[in-house]
Image (cartoon, rainbow, N blue to C red):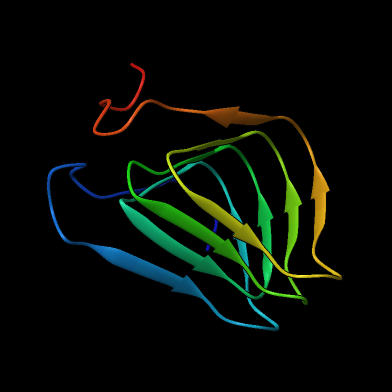
Length: 88
């Protein structure tokens, strides 16, 4: 996917970036599971899970995060307060 992916932060939306797939753009989703590659900032009001094959180039704004051994992050991790809305 080339472009931003946005879901309302008050929804139950989930996004799964599968292994061998790539997103180039910003992701805003309450629940995100990454097994592939993301080039862009991530905003999650609930949970981000990075699997061992995940590659993220960008900042991750999260309420809760799980990072498996082997996942690659080239960016900054920024904790959000629980139920804090996405930054504008």
